[in-house]
Length: 271
Ligand code: LHQ
Image (cartoon, rainbow, N blue to C red):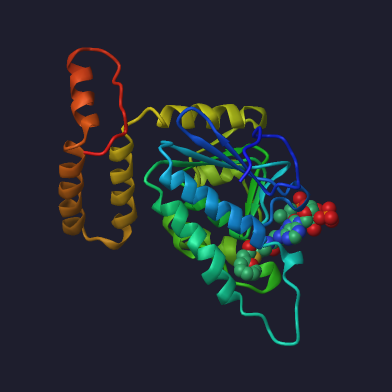
């Protein structure tokens, strides 16, 4: 998989990978189709995320080239034959593994939504840990416009983030949600001016790459388990996760740095 300068638009390469000091930038790069996903891009994205998982990078930033973030499935790639298509097979083969790969990463994943995020493209953004969006971006649950149901975790993430009433209406009406409203509603972390998006996202990725990576991964475990847990279950889980965090070198370093009144130098190493 080639490594290219991040914002170069070379549509012959559907995914750009840029390994920075201790973090990785992944750019969907089919700008002429608003970075819609076909089988090739899915393959490249899966390989990039596997690389990020195995690599010693400590944060991942996902964004899109051109004026869109991702328009979901490439509809031009879905030829209709005599028989109705099995879209479930497509989810099983590509989309569900993609969402699982993002959620399983043991390092923070930032999404910089540079433009429209539609269909599964919106779900990909919501699967990330921290979502920043350009002020001009919008989120569209566009499935109803083509007779489909929201997928790629959309019906999991949306009601949890913004509540059932707003999630249902967004999905049934397929109306675009401006990035500023998405932030007001708690769908995403923050909106920034378009021109500041990538600097803001990269500064955040560089910061997270200096943080206690193991502790952050354990924190993600707590959030992932929370919706299905009772308070008792969650208290037990926090006990176990804190036990694990307390055994990491970064806990020792964090306390030492505090006591010595100096900045911590976290390594992200496991116990
Ligand atoms: C596209 C696409 C696109 C191809 C823009 N495909 N070319 C999972 C499992 C299996 C199957 C089905 O789906 C799924 C999950 C899904 O993601 S389903 C949802 C699929 N996505 C959509 O329905 C969104 C379709 N796109 C749009 O509604 C609009 O393009 C949005 C609202 C995203 C942006 O609108 P505009 O800003 O007005 O841009 P545009 O429509 O003019 O698009 C620009 C170009 O990108 C255009 O090509 P052209 O050659 O005319 O310039 C579009 O055809 C192309 N494009 N989305 N998904």
